[in-house]
Amino acid sequence: MPIFRDTMSRMYEIEAYTYEVVLPAMESIARLTDPLPWPRYEFSDVQGPPPHTLVLVDMRPEGFAMADRSVFLDAAHCRLALKQLARFHGAGLALKHLKPDHFEEIKKRLNLSIWDTAAMRENLKPYHSAMVQVPHVVRDKFPEGSDVHTRLKKLFGAFKEDSVALMGPLTGPGYTIIHNDLHVINMMYQYDRVTNAVTDCRLIDFQMCVYGLPALDIVTILLVCTDKPMRDLHWDNLLQGYHQELLATLSAAGCSEPEKLFPWTLLQDQLKIAAPYGLCVTPVYHFGLYSDAETVEELRQIMADNANSATNGEQRKVTLKVTPALKTRLEGLVQDVADKGWLPTVEELENRLAAYAQEKKSARVH
Image 1: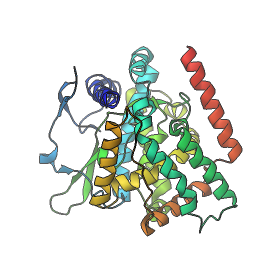
Image 2: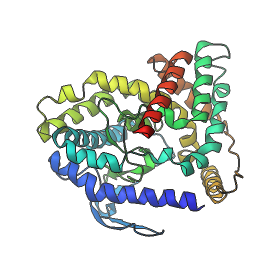
Image 3: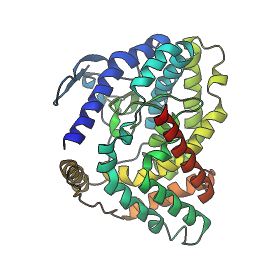
């Protein structure tokens, strides 16, 4: 428990630092104007042991609320989320390009992913072990022995062993500060009081912020929080909207050639890296976000129990509850990732894991 408590304290420190230092720097460099992509910050106290305090402006009077997590995000919700995400990413990239020394200071503070801490790895291990069932769940559509099934078994086996290794290299072109946990309950939406139409979005809960691959945030929205029919109709348009907003943010910041800083081809390359991770985490998020209240509470209790038992190694197991909805969702997701050429071969995955291991080793040396 003390180990996990330390991790929770670190998460609050990250969020306070993000609101106090990172977001104001982004706002200034990119000349962002209201409405900002995030709530206004008021106060924080993260010193000493928990409980910690972080106070933001109440957005409820403006009509903001959580989206209904019992349904997948539609195109309107995704478009607004991606617009704000593009402003967040674009402002970070502008800071990296125009004030590299300041960005480097921020990067040093946000260079360790919470997902890569010992406590978080241990706490999530039972979930990752349950995910190896996924190839079996989709075997009707992708039979055992087929090329896709073979790739899936290797992918989910690798995810079980080291999920962080599938989050991409430690650094690369277009890397910036990312949210790192941007799913449906880490955003707030504004709804028209008369029509209930969604009109705006704010990104919240910056506790996992890290220097990393921007496409990880995109796939957490577009793969984890949507269904195949929506993606079939709107995928290209949503990505184009994100990219155009990102370039506009870079341009407003004074970057002379924004397309060279983050070209469309780079976005596609990043999505190929990030998509397998998005596929692997979808079952975890599915039950944590879209299940009935009883199942969600059960998973929360398992996490709490496992956090309390972190010191003695006794953990409750997580079973992947296969429902028709989950089966259909996973089949559609695997199909989309495979059709786009983003499902790595066994050899590609082995090479990627080996390169990541070497990169981690070199980072520890330096």
